[in-house]
Image (cartoon, rainbow, N blue to C red; front, side, top):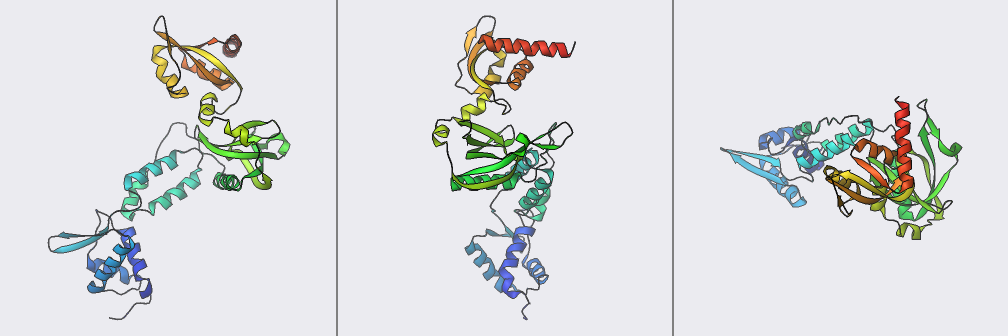
Length: 328
């Protein structure tokens, strides 16, 4: 038997064939495998293939043989990811707002390469989520990578920060002046990535939306604010901040119908104390950052009201009065 031009690549092409063209529902006979190898200009026979299969098994590939009637069939069994796991990942990629549509397609294409071409068709899914708007900033992936590099290097960073104006144009905040902060962590909230960092100018821990950060540069200055960050409770912070809009942190007492207990527990955690009141209602005192977003959340709930402190009650009353004025 004459050898093909790519004979030295035989095991690599065999691996490619098993990965891309076989699964539990799509098996190949020895004759079919020989034919597929010949398409890559690789020659093979039954005896040498048996040896090749053993070498691939020894390398870690789960080459399975199954007899149906008098015929033996072969396919790749266990893979790095099971199909249901990849479906979950694909759904997560498609539904994530911070991943652009273009990047979503590229990532899903890469995930398809982890299964056979037949199973890959099952990953070409479409997850529809009401009102979903994908981010338009393709650089977020590089931003995250650079931020991790800064965290590993224990270094401060500089960057510009932007917002959208009414003309739908990117507008640099602070007139384009560079922000310089000490990064201490990345967090995920309301489907966006945020950088948690120490700002030396204000001596505070602040957060910045990663997809709105531009031209991130790692400096040669060592991070500051370690003590501030160590006393900073990130899980509690995310409970207090609504939509990542900060405000003055205050203990607020809420009164609600008993049917709203689950809503408050979902938002503030099971550690909050629910104190029964008359009329099928309860009260709970929680730590929140007072912002328009928090007040709007209370309005939207309908059967929840703020009963203290008085300063926050007045802010709520002003909010409601403004809403009534806008629609009357």
